[in-house]
Image (tube, rainbow, N blue to C red; front, top):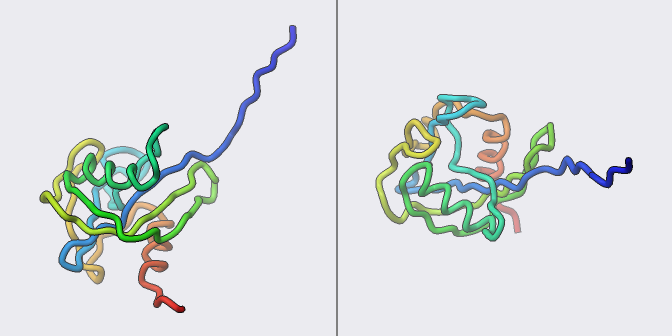
Length: 136
């Protein structure tokens, strides 16, 4: 018997947002493993038919119950195991009050100098990229 099945082990696209309100960063407290209970940015898998930007805005609503507007693309990242490609935007909270919902235990706004422990090493790398002075 001949089998034509091919298994592709491609990384999955994930999108998220560094959303700010009054110079404070929106974080969600993870409600699922991995890193249950630790804090991260609202992120989620890009669904077929959605753009990464639409996904970033949707995840902020689903995980933190806020509406966001995106200002710019910060960067594209991948983890060591290459299971995801993470597309991160910078944006603003324009509606709602942060609250945990969907896969988040909680959602809050934090001053950049008073952040809780973040869930993933790449979260710190993303923040470093955001804080790095822009050069022209």
